[in-house]
Image (tube, rainbow, N blue to C red):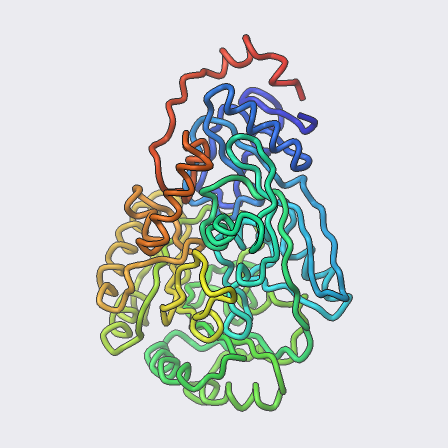
Length: 466
Protein backbone atom coordinates (compact mmCIF):
# COMPACT_ATOMS: atom_id res chain seq x y z
CA UNK A 1 0.00 0.00 0.00
CA UNK A 2 1.48 3.31 -1.10
CA UNK A 3 -0.72 5.64 0.91
CA UNK A 4 -0.12 6.56 4.58
CA UNK A 5 -1.18 4.21 7.40
CA UNK A 6 -2.15 5.45 10.85
CA UNK A 7 -2.73 3.71 14.16
CA UNK A 8 -4.46 5.54 17.05
CA UNK A 9 -1.15 6.60 18.63
CA UNK A 10 0.29 8.06 15.42
CA UNK A 11 0.43 11.80 14.69
CA UNK A 12 -2.19 12.61 12.08
CA UNK A 13 -4.57 9.80 13.06
CA UNK A 14 -7.26 12.14 14.42
CA UNK A 15 -7.16 14.31 11.29
CA UNK A 16 -7.31 11.25 9.04
CA UNK A 17 -10.48 9.83 10.64
CA UNK A 18 -12.23 13.15 11.36
CA UNK A 19 -15.73 13.58 9.93
CA UNK A 20 -17.37 16.82 8.80
CA UNK A 21 -20.02 16.11 11.43
CA UNK A 22 -18.09 16.80 14.64
CA UNK A 23 -20.61 14.93 16.78
CA UNK A 24 -19.43 11.69 15.12
CA UNK A 25 -16.08 10.52 16.47
CA UNK A 26 -14.71 7.58 14.49
CA UNK A 27 -12.46 5.16 16.38
CA UNK A 28 -11.09 2.58 13.93
CA UNK A 29 -8.14 0.36 14.83
CA UNK A 30 -6.27 1.35 11.67
CA UNK A 31 -6.74 4.20 9.18
CA UNK A 32 -5.38 4.12 5.65
CA UNK A 33 -5.19 6.98 3.15
CA UNK A 34 -5.64 5.36 -0.27
CA UNK A 35 -4.02 7.02 -3.28
CA UNK A 36 -5.79 5.04 -6.01
CA UNK A 37 -7.97 2.00 -6.74
CA UNK A 38 -5.01 -0.36 -6.45
CA UNK A 39 -4.38 0.92 -2.94
CA UNK A 40 -8.02 0.33 -2.02
CA UNK A 41 -7.95 -3.22 -3.41
CA UNK A 42 -4.74 -4.03 -1.54
CA UNK A 43 -6.13 -2.63 1.71
CA UNK A 44 -9.34 -4.63 1.37
CA UNK A 45 -7.39 -7.84 0.75
CA UNK A 46 -5.24 -7.16 3.81
CA UNK A 47 -8.30 -6.54 5.97
CA UNK A 48 -9.86 -9.79 4.76
CA UNK A 49 -6.73 -11.69 5.78
CA UNK A 50 -6.91 -10.12 9.26
CA UNK A 51 -10.65 -10.69 9.66
CA UNK A 52 -11.23 -6.96 10.00
CA UNK A 53 -14.40 -5.09 9.00
CA UNK A 54 -13.84 -2.19 6.60
CA UNK A 55 -15.30 1.31 6.50
CA UNK A 56 -14.77 4.04 3.93
CA UNK A 57 -14.90 7.82 4.20
CA UNK A 58 -14.20 10.69 1.84
CA UNK A 59 -15.42 14.08 3.07
CA UNK A 60 -17.24 12.74 6.14
CA UNK A 61 -20.49 14.62 5.45
CA UNK A 62 -22.48 11.40 5.68
CA UNK A 63 -20.99 10.34 9.02
CA UNK A 64 -24.25 9.95 10.93
CA UNK A 65 -23.01 6.96 12.98
CA UNK A 66 -19.55 6.43 14.43
CA UNK A 67 -17.15 3.76 13.19
CA UNK A 68 -15.83 1.57 16.00
CA UNK A 69 -12.88 -0.73 15.30
CA UNK A 70 -11.74 -2.23 12.04
CA UNK A 71 -10.03 -0.51 9.11
CA UNK A 72 -11.11 2.92 7.89
CA UNK A 73 -10.06 3.62 4.30
CA UNK A 74 -9.96 7.32 3.51
CA UNK A 75 -10.42 8.11 -0.18
CA UNK A 76 -9.98 11.89 0.04
CA UNK A 77 -6.61 11.74 -1.78
CA UNK A 78 -8.21 10.13 -4.86
CA UNK A 79 -8.72 13.35 -6.81
CA UNK A 80 -8.88 12.24 -10.44
CA UNK A 81 -11.12 14.61 -12.42
CA UNK A 82 -11.66 14.82 -16.16
CA UNK A 83 -14.43 16.31 -18.28
CA UNK A 84 -15.33 15.56 -21.89
CA UNK A 85 -17.14 18.70 -23.11
CA UNK A 86 -18.11 17.07 -26.41
CA UNK A 87 -19.80 14.04 -24.86
CA UNK A 88 -20.85 16.12 -21.83
CA UNK A 89 -19.51 13.61 -19.35
CA UNK A 90 -17.26 13.65 -16.31
CA UNK A 91 -15.09 11.07 -14.55
CA UNK A 92 -14.09 11.59 -10.92
CA UNK A 93 -12.16 9.74 -8.26
CA UNK A 94 -13.66 8.85 -4.91
CA UNK A 95 -12.21 11.89 -3.13
CA UNK A 96 -13.52 14.59 -5.48
CA UNK A 97 -16.00 17.12 -4.09
CA UNK A 98 -18.79 18.60 -6.14
CA UNK A 99 -17.21 22.05 -6.05
CA UNK A 100 -14.30 20.86 -8.18
CA UNK A 101 -16.69 19.38 -10.75
CA UNK A 102 -18.96 22.42 -10.78
CA UNK A 103 -16.09 24.87 -11.22
CA UNK A 104 -14.39 22.86 -13.96
CA UNK A 105 -17.61 22.02 -15.83
CA UNK A 106 -18.67 25.68 -15.80
CA UNK A 107 -15.74 26.58 -18.05
CA UNK A 108 -17.50 24.53 -20.76
CA UNK A 109 -20.99 25.86 -20.00
CA UNK A 110 -21.91 22.62 -18.24
CA UNK A 111 -22.99 21.53 -14.78
CA UNK A 112 -23.29 18.36 -12.73
CA UNK A 113 -26.35 17.51 -10.66
CA UNK A 114 -25.05 18.65 -7.29
CA UNK A 115 -27.21 19.17 -4.22
CA UNK A 116 -27.62 21.99 -1.72
CA UNK A 117 -23.87 22.16 -1.00
CA UNK A 118 -20.92 21.53 -3.31
CA UNK A 119 -18.69 20.65 -0.34
CA UNK A 120 -19.83 17.01 -0.30
CA UNK A 121 -18.14 14.19 -2.18
CA UNK A 122 -19.54 13.21 -5.57
CA UNK A 123 -19.35 9.45 -4.99
CA UNK A 124 -21.06 9.17 -1.60
CA UNK A 125 -23.75 11.64 -2.66
CA UNK A 126 -24.48 9.72 -5.86
CA UNK A 127 -24.48 6.28 -4.23
CA UNK A 128 -27.33 7.49 -2.04
CA UNK A 129 -29.23 8.71 -5.11
CA UNK A 130 -28.15 12.35 -4.91
CA UNK A 131 -30.99 14.91 -4.64
CA UNK A 132 -29.95 17.81 -6.92
CA UNK A 133 -30.85 21.49 -6.91
CA UNK A 134 -32.34 20.90 -10.38
CA UNK A 135 -33.70 17.46 -9.54
CA UNK A 136 -37.28 18.03 -10.66
CA UNK A 137 -36.00 18.78 -14.16
CA UNK A 138 -33.26 16.17 -14.48
CA UNK A 139 -33.95 13.54 -11.80
CA UNK A 140 -31.59 12.12 -9.21
CA UNK A 141 -27.84 12.28 -9.80
CA UNK A 142 -27.69 8.48 -9.87
CA UNK A 143 -30.09 8.48 -12.84
CA UNK A 144 -27.27 9.78 -15.00
CA UNK A 145 -24.38 7.54 -13.97
CA UNK A 146 -22.60 5.86 -16.86
CA UNK A 147 -20.35 3.55 -14.84
CA UNK A 148 -18.87 2.86 -11.43
CA UNK A 149 -15.50 1.33 -10.63
CA UNK A 150 -15.96 -0.88 -7.59
CA UNK A 151 -13.68 -2.85 -5.26
CA UNK A 152 -15.56 -5.77 -3.73
CA UNK A 153 -14.78 -7.62 -0.50
CA UNK A 154 -12.37 -10.04 -2.19
CA UNK A 155 -10.27 -7.12 -3.44
CA UNK A 156 -11.47 -7.50 -7.03
CA UNK A 157 -11.78 -4.34 -9.11
CA UNK A 158 -14.93 -4.36 -11.21
CA UNK A 159 -16.40 -2.00 -13.77
CA UNK A 160 -20.13 -1.68 -13.20
CA UNK A 161 -22.46 -0.30 -15.86
CA UNK A 162 -25.77 -1.08 -17.50
CA UNK A 163 -24.01 -3.71 -19.64
CA UNK A 164 -21.30 -4.87 -17.20
CA UNK A 165 -22.55 -6.29 -13.89
CA UNK A 166 -26.07 -4.91 -14.45
CA UNK A 167 -27.45 -6.12 -11.10
CA UNK A 168 -24.72 -4.24 -9.24
CA UNK A 169 -25.42 -1.22 -11.42
CA UNK A 170 -29.07 -1.35 -10.36
CA UNK A 171 -28.15 -1.62 -6.66
CA UNK A 172 -25.31 0.91 -6.52
CA UNK A 173 -27.62 3.67 -7.73
CA UNK A 174 -29.25 4.34 -4.38
CA UNK A 175 -27.92 1.34 -2.45
CA UNK A 176 -25.20 3.41 -0.73
CA UNK A 177 -22.22 1.44 0.69
CA UNK A 178 -23.57 -2.06 0.87
CA UNK A 179 -21.56 -3.82 -1.79
CA UNK A 180 -18.02 -2.46 -1.84
CA UNK A 181 -15.94 0.68 -2.26
CA UNK A 182 -16.51 2.82 -5.33
CA UNK A 183 -13.17 4.23 -6.47
CA UNK A 184 -14.38 6.23 -9.49
CA UNK A 185 -17.60 7.22 -11.19
CA UNK A 186 -18.53 8.44 -14.69
CA UNK A 187 -21.68 10.47 -15.30
CA UNK A 188 -23.46 12.86 -17.66
CA UNK A 189 -23.32 16.66 -17.44
CA UNK A 190 -25.96 19.21 -18.48
CA UNK A 191 -26.12 22.76 -19.89
CA UNK A 192 -25.75 25.37 -17.16
CA UNK A 193 -27.25 28.43 -18.80
CA UNK A 194 -30.49 30.29 -17.97
CA UNK A 195 -30.70 29.47 -14.28
CA UNK A 196 -32.81 31.72 -12.06
CA UNK A 197 -32.49 30.82 -8.39
CA UNK A 198 -31.96 31.97 -4.83
CA UNK A 199 -33.90 32.47 -1.61
CA UNK A 200 -36.66 34.61 -0.18
CA UNK A 201 -36.61 35.20 3.59
CA UNK A 202 -39.78 35.88 5.60
CA UNK A 203 -40.04 36.84 9.24
CA UNK A 204 -41.03 33.78 11.27
CA UNK A 205 -44.23 35.48 12.47
CA UNK A 206 -45.62 34.84 8.96
CA UNK A 207 -44.78 31.12 9.07
CA UNK A 208 -48.42 29.90 8.93
CA UNK A 209 -49.26 32.12 5.95
CA UNK A 210 -46.11 31.22 4.03
CA UNK A 211 -46.51 27.48 4.69
CA UNK A 212 -50.14 27.54 3.62
CA UNK A 213 -49.30 29.38 0.39
CA UNK A 214 -46.35 27.06 -0.25
CA UNK A 215 -48.61 23.98 0.01
CA UNK A 216 -50.84 25.37 -2.78
CA UNK A 217 -48.09 26.98 -4.85
CA UNK A 218 -46.03 23.83 -5.37
CA UNK A 219 -48.95 22.22 -7.21
CA UNK A 220 -48.61 24.92 -9.90
CA UNK A 221 -44.88 24.48 -10.56
CA UNK A 222 -43.61 22.94 -13.79
CA UNK A 223 -40.85 20.34 -13.69
CA UNK A 224 -38.29 23.02 -14.59
CA UNK A 225 -38.77 24.49 -11.10
CA UNK A 226 -37.50 23.12 -7.79
CA UNK A 227 -38.38 24.49 -4.37
CA UNK A 228 -38.10 23.93 -0.65
CA UNK A 229 -39.22 25.73 2.50
CA UNK A 230 -37.10 25.84 5.65
CA UNK A 231 -37.89 27.00 9.17
CA UNK A 232 -34.64 28.47 10.46
CA UNK A 233 -33.65 29.56 13.94
CA UNK A 234 -30.44 31.35 13.06
CA UNK A 235 -27.62 31.98 15.54
CA UNK A 236 -26.30 35.49 16.19
CA UNK A 237 -23.02 34.98 14.30
CA UNK A 238 -21.01 37.02 11.80
CA UNK A 239 -21.43 34.35 9.11
CA UNK A 240 -25.18 35.14 9.03
CA UNK A 241 -26.31 38.22 7.00
CA UNK A 242 -26.92 41.05 9.44
CA UNK A 243 -30.72 41.38 8.95
CA UNK A 244 -31.14 37.66 9.75
CA UNK A 245 -28.84 37.20 12.75
CA UNK A 246 -30.47 35.72 15.81
CA UNK A 247 -33.85 35.59 14.06
CA UNK A 248 -36.51 32.99 13.42
CA UNK A 249 -37.12 33.10 9.67
CA UNK A 250 -38.84 31.09 6.98
CA UNK A 251 -36.57 30.57 3.97
CA UNK A 252 -38.02 29.77 0.55
CA UNK A 253 -35.42 28.13 -1.70
CA UNK A 254 -36.13 28.29 -5.43
CA UNK A 255 -34.44 27.24 -8.67
CA UNK A 256 -35.66 27.37 -12.27
CA UNK A 257 -33.92 26.75 -15.57
CA UNK A 258 -35.42 28.58 -18.51
CA UNK A 259 -36.74 32.04 -19.31
CA UNK A 260 -36.11 34.49 -16.45
CA UNK A 261 -39.44 36.22 -16.99
CA UNK A 262 -41.26 32.92 -16.53
CA UNK A 263 -39.18 32.12 -13.44
CA UNK A 264 -40.10 35.49 -11.93
CA UNK A 265 -43.78 35.07 -12.73
CA UNK A 266 -43.84 31.61 -11.15
CA UNK A 267 -42.25 32.95 -7.98
CA UNK A 268 -44.60 35.91 -7.60
CA UNK A 269 -47.37 34.17 -5.58
CA UNK A 270 -44.83 33.38 -2.86
CA UNK A 271 -43.32 36.85 -2.89
CA UNK A 272 -46.79 38.36 -2.49
CA UNK A 273 -48.10 36.05 0.24
CA UNK A 274 -46.40 37.93 3.10
CA UNK A 275 -43.88 40.75 3.66
CA UNK A 276 -40.37 39.44 3.06
CA UNK A 277 -37.17 40.45 4.83
CA UNK A 278 -34.84 39.72 1.92
CA UNK A 279 -35.19 38.57 -1.68
CA UNK A 280 -31.96 37.01 -2.95
CA UNK A 281 -33.36 35.46 -6.13
CA UNK A 282 -32.19 36.29 -9.65
CA UNK A 283 -30.00 34.96 -12.49
CA UNK A 284 -27.44 32.58 -10.99
CA UNK A 285 -24.34 30.80 -12.24
CA UNK A 286 -24.04 27.10 -11.44
CA UNK A 287 -20.88 27.95 -9.49
CA UNK A 288 -23.11 29.91 -7.08
CA UNK A 289 -25.47 27.07 -6.18
CA UNK A 290 -24.25 27.07 -2.56
CA UNK A 291 -25.83 30.49 -2.07
CA UNK A 292 -29.36 29.07 -2.47
CA UNK A 293 -29.56 26.93 0.69
CA UNK A 294 -26.66 28.51 2.58
CA UNK A 295 -25.61 25.19 4.13
CA UNK A 296 -22.71 25.31 6.64
CA UNK A 297 -19.30 25.21 4.94
CA UNK A 298 -17.38 24.49 8.16
CA UNK A 299 -17.50 21.29 10.27
CA UNK A 300 -20.21 21.36 12.94
CA UNK A 301 -21.48 18.93 15.61
CA UNK A 302 -24.91 18.03 14.23
CA UNK A 303 -27.64 15.47 14.70
CA UNK A 304 -30.08 15.04 11.81
CA UNK A 305 -33.30 13.22 11.06
CA UNK A 306 -35.13 12.86 7.77
CA UNK A 307 -38.10 11.00 6.29
CA UNK A 308 -40.47 11.20 3.33
CA UNK A 309 -43.99 12.63 3.17
CA UNK A 310 -46.78 11.53 0.84
CA UNK A 311 -48.71 14.78 1.28
CA UNK A 312 -48.77 18.19 2.92
CA UNK A 313 -52.36 18.40 4.14
CA UNK A 314 -53.93 20.51 6.86
CA UNK A 315 -52.97 18.10 9.64
CA UNK A 316 -49.34 17.95 8.45
CA UNK A 317 -49.10 21.73 8.28
CA UNK A 318 -50.55 22.05 11.78
CA UNK A 319 -48.02 19.52 13.10
CA UNK A 320 -45.11 21.40 11.51
CA UNK A 321 -46.25 24.73 12.95
CA UNK A 322 -46.83 23.16 16.35
CA UNK A 323 -43.16 22.17 16.50
CA UNK A 324 -41.49 24.91 14.45
CA UNK A 325 -43.89 27.85 14.23
CA UNK A 326 -43.83 31.26 15.95
CA UNK A 327 -43.42 31.29 19.71
CA UNK A 328 -41.96 27.78 19.84
CA UNK A 329 -38.67 27.23 21.69
CA UNK A 330 -36.94 24.53 19.66
CA UNK A 331 -33.38 23.19 19.58
CA UNK A 332 -33.84 22.39 15.88
CA UNK A 333 -31.95 24.95 13.79
CA UNK A 334 -33.53 23.88 10.52
CA UNK A 335 -36.65 21.98 9.50
CA UNK A 336 -37.04 21.72 5.73
CA UNK A 337 -39.77 20.62 3.33
CA UNK A 338 -38.26 19.87 -0.07
CA UNK A 339 -40.54 19.35 -3.05
CA UNK A 340 -40.02 16.10 -4.96
CA UNK A 341 -41.86 14.83 -8.03
CA UNK A 342 -41.20 15.78 -11.63
CA UNK A 343 -38.24 13.88 -13.11
CA UNK A 344 -37.41 12.59 -9.61
CA UNK A 345 -40.46 10.33 -9.84
CA UNK A 346 -39.18 8.27 -12.79
CA UNK A 347 -35.94 6.31 -13.05
CA UNK A 348 -33.94 7.09 -16.18
CA UNK A 349 -33.28 3.37 -16.78
CA UNK A 350 -36.62 2.04 -15.60
CA UNK A 351 -35.47 0.87 -12.17
CA UNK A 352 -32.84 1.45 -9.49
CA UNK A 353 -32.51 1.45 -5.68
CA UNK A 354 -33.35 5.11 -5.02
CA UNK A 355 -36.06 5.74 -2.46
CA UNK A 356 -38.40 8.70 -2.72
CA UNK A 357 -39.69 8.17 -6.26
CA UNK A 358 -43.30 8.09 -5.06
CA UNK A 359 -43.02 10.67 -2.27
CA UNK A 360 -44.29 14.24 -2.47
CA UNK A 361 -41.78 15.85 -0.09
CA UNK A 362 -38.58 15.19 1.79
CA UNK A 363 -38.76 16.41 5.40
CA UNK A 364 -35.42 17.01 7.10
CA UNK A 365 -34.37 18.37 10.51
CA UNK A 366 -30.95 19.36 11.84
CA UNK A 367 -29.66 20.76 15.12
CA UNK A 368 -26.40 21.29 16.99
CA UNK A 369 -25.67 18.13 18.96
CA UNK A 370 -23.90 19.36 22.08
CA UNK A 371 -24.95 18.51 25.67
CA UNK A 372 -27.66 18.89 26.79
CA UNK A 373 -29.18 19.63 23.36
CA UNK A 374 -28.24 16.25 21.84
CA UNK A 375 -30.67 14.33 24.04
CA UNK A 376 -33.37 16.97 23.62
CA UNK A 377 -32.99 16.82 19.82
CA UNK A 378 -33.70 13.11 19.86
CA UNK A 379 -36.90 13.69 21.83
CA UNK A 380 -38.05 16.47 19.49
CA UNK A 381 -37.29 14.41 16.40
CA UNK A 382 -39.28 11.47 17.78
CA UNK A 383 -42.23 13.73 18.58
CA UNK A 384 -42.20 15.38 15.14
CA UNK A 385 -41.96 12.06 13.35
CA UNK A 386 -44.88 10.70 15.39
CA UNK A 387 -47.02 13.78 14.69
CA UNK A 388 -46.31 13.48 10.95
CA UNK A 389 -46.85 9.74 10.85
CA UNK A 390 -50.17 9.97 8.97
CA UNK A 391 -48.60 12.06 6.20
CA UNK A 392 -45.38 10.01 6.09
CA UNK A 393 -44.62 7.28 3.57
CA UNK A 394 -42.77 5.35 6.29
CA UNK A 395 -39.60 5.48 4.21
CA UNK A 396 -36.52 7.67 4.11
CA UNK A 397 -34.11 9.07 1.55
CA UNK A 398 -30.84 7.42 2.56
CA UNK A 399 -28.62 10.52 2.24
CA UNK A 400 -31.00 12.50 4.46
CA UNK A 401 -31.87 9.69 6.87
CA UNK A 402 -29.56 10.95 9.62
CA UNK A 403 -28.48 8.96 12.68
CA UNK A 404 -29.99 5.47 12.77
CA UNK A 405 -30.69 3.65 16.03
CA UNK A 406 -30.86 0.02 14.86
CA UNK A 407 -30.99 -2.21 11.79
CA UNK A 408 -34.76 -1.83 11.42
CA UNK A 409 -34.45 1.95 11.38
CA UNK A 410 -31.56 1.80 8.92
CA UNK A 411 -33.50 -0.52 6.59
CA UNK A 412 -36.30 2.06 6.13
CA UNK A 413 -34.17 3.66 3.43
CA UNK A 414 -35.26 0.97 0.96
CA UNK A 415 -38.52 -0.63 -0.08
CA UNK A 416 -38.83 -4.34 0.90
CA UNK A 417 -38.22 -5.60 -2.64
CA UNK A 418 -35.06 -3.48 -2.95
CA UNK A 419 -33.87 -4.61 0.47
CA UNK A 420 -34.19 -8.24 -0.57
CA UNK A 421 -32.15 -7.65 -3.73
CA UNK A 422 -29.50 -5.83 -1.71
CA UNK A 423 -29.35 -8.73 0.74
CA UNK A 424 -28.99 -11.30 -2.03
CA UNK A 425 -26.20 -9.32 -3.68
CA UNK A 426 -24.55 -8.75 -0.30
CA UNK A 427 -24.48 -12.49 0.39
CA UNK A 428 -22.83 -13.03 -2.98
CA UNK A 429 -20.17 -10.29 -3.13
CA UNK A 430 -19.60 -9.73 0.62
CA UNK A 431 -20.54 -13.00 2.38
CA UNK A 432 -18.58 -12.11 5.55
CA UNK A 433 -20.12 -8.64 5.73
CA UNK A 434 -16.76 -6.88 5.70
CA UNK A 435 -18.47 -3.63 4.74
CA UNK A 436 -20.61 -3.56 7.86
CA UNK A 437 -20.56 0.14 8.77
CA UNK A 438 -23.05 2.83 7.81
CA UNK A 439 -26.16 2.18 5.76
CA UNK A 440 -25.79 -1.52 4.96
CA UNK A 441 -28.19 -4.44 5.00
CA UNK A 442 -27.81 -8.17 5.34
CA UNK A 443 -25.57 -10.23 7.52
CA UNK A 444 -24.48 -9.46 11.10
CA UNK A 445 -21.08 -7.86 11.68
CA UNK A 446 -18.21 -10.34 11.49
CA UNK A 447 -16.30 -11.09 14.70
CA UNK A 448 -13.27 -8.86 14.96
CA UNK A 449 -10.92 -11.33 16.59
CA UNK A 450 -7.66 -9.68 15.60
CA UNK A 451 -6.49 -7.03 18.04
CA UNK A 452 -4.45 -4.07 16.89
CA UNK A 453 -1.36 -5.13 18.85
CA UNK A 454 -1.53 -8.58 17.23
CA UNK A 455 -1.63 -7.02 13.78
CA UNK A 456 1.32 -4.75 14.48
CA UNK A 457 3.34 -7.56 16.08
CA UNK A 458 2.66 -10.41 13.64
CA UNK A 459 1.88 -8.49 10.49
CA UNK A 460 4.30 -5.62 10.59
CA UNK A 461 4.99 -5.81 6.88
CA UNK A 462 1.30 -5.33 6.24
CA UNK A 463 1.12 -2.19 8.36
CA UNK A 464 3.89 0.07 7.10
CA UNK A 465 4.93 3.12 9.05
CA UNK A 466 3.91 6.65 8.06
